[in-house]
Image (cartoon, rainbow, N blue to C red):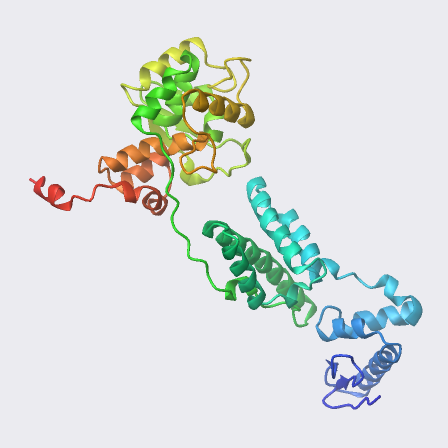
Length: 393
């Protein structure tokens, strides 16, 4: 075994993967020379015992030489491993995923990221080191997803979740390495370097006027006002079931305000989703006035007519499912023409786009960005440019 001292590097020529050179620093005086000699002696003892995994961890800066030498001096070569800090959470993808998910505060984001990242763990293996995953492997995974018929948007979410995982760990390790004056053991994000997935804007399902009328015809008076409110106010399901009575200001508007830090289905309530929605004076205002007088609840404005208690998401979803099927329509996301509680939100904005309403006005109405409004509803805008031109002045 050849331990040559070249620029204070220790080459371990019997390392299974080739030379393992560990930089110990440049001595400035006799004391530092003696310290480096002691460290070289410990590394030599580890090499003679075949502790290649520890030497590789030191080489890759997962453990520092000072840390390992101190533990060897305190506990001996036989027992020092029992006191080594376990880097499994920061080295294997499985441990890194679990620790990363614990830091994601939003429940819905944690659920989506967890599904994609646990799929990643299944594909590459539990014990795969986090830093060993390359962009070629990520590209192969995405290609297999595409061949299996997985939607492009789902593939894009997989890349987003993986990139978030690596961004988190690179940032954490960079901060630690800076404090400990060492090199970080992970610096490369394979998901950012991988090929991007081109996604297409999702065309949202919305109710036709005949479908809307058919749905109202099969339900009783309390539910008529509830379905009409979901449609004409473009409410998300969580906004509908948590709407307080004091936020219904008739006959002018309904105010959508934050509901704590969470919502029953887990959607985050951002600043852009807060605002006042105007009430349609013909199709909605009379229904809301009647509902306010007869059926409105104390905690939430809309309540389950069977129990008189505030709605939660699952009973509301089941109610919509029963009524949609009763009206002779298809329920569910799997079918292209299926209807869900979120379909009501896209109905009036789609009608507005068909009537050539400006995208900025639609975005303001749904309390979202013009980019989102254009992606969802621009294909419904009339294409007769010459007719629009002739209506000027």
